[in-house]
Length: 405
Ligand code: PLP
Image 1 (tube, rainbow, N blue to C red):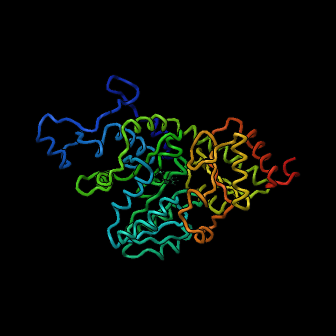
Image 2 (cartoon, rainbow, N blue to C red):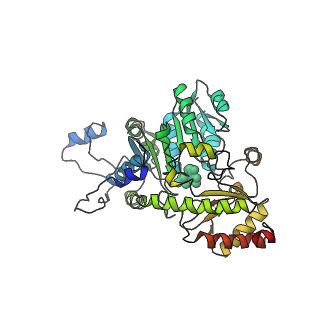
Image 3 (cartoon, rainbow, N blue to C red):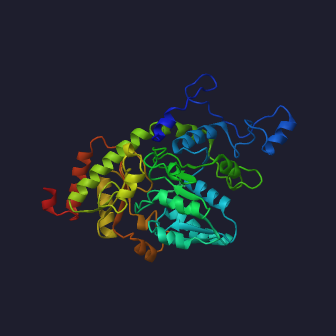
């Protein structure tokens, strides 16, 4: 049967402490025990349903985790204080000194920096490669490799990972496939395509209101419990715990995700098609010209569309900066990093979210100076937005006058 992630969120039912339609918020860092023996058993991990201390788990965090596990179709999920908190905990849990990671070279700059600059302190080595080149991925796997890591739609180049094919490779070599699905919640369900662990930065589309940071690790119950183990769990010991009040607010926002994602996708598809017709260098997975278009079509949950992320190459960093400043002055969005907001957000990744990647590597992977990354907003009248954006481009000679007629 077709997997529908939004139905799984919708079908959860809540009764708060006083019959509220939202679960009650657990506003406590620590929990009482009626007997000392139960406290000891809980430390040993033997008492289900007992709470100990909120860095380990809390009812509000468990509710949000449950909803996100339902969305991704995994057994369980642990929420974290940020997307990086999720990514670093997974990596530190799976890798020991001397181990190796195979990853896409186009990934979020913070993840790249963690693998490239931080992990060598622990003698963990990373091979960065083109994740769409499956032969290169297989060739890079060694007996020391502990995971294949990728983003379902990559930041910022919007490459599409063939999760089914990567999962087959990972299974053949008995290693997990870890997928960051931040750019494509609902549109892609990595675990249903064979990924073992799915990560999100909740900061983005899932929360959708740019008012907090958060993350999640979705996986098997065993793996999620191992992250929380009081003796050697990376989640528990590195301490990237989400606050209960935040978990409760993100859960409420999650319930409208399906409506928002459809609108983000619809608006981004409209702008991408128009800009392509105008002869601009636009990248959007929903365009047939996108090299990963057919792979995404094969993998995706169609009704949510190709997502809200789009890039436009306007030739130089100078032009990119001019255009972004003008668009912000005309109130067409914000010159800001991050994504998944009701307003359009735009930034030049080469000098912002991917600035951790050295210039020559940026060039090698095709991250050009003039590239602008757009997170398209929920504009009610996207045709009006298009007309206004086009005017900005004409004023800066990015579009020729006849193209704007
Ligand atoms: N993964 C992706 C794809 C991202 O774009 C980001 C942040 O920009 C992160 C992870 C990190 O998330 P956070 O900022 O919530 O730590």
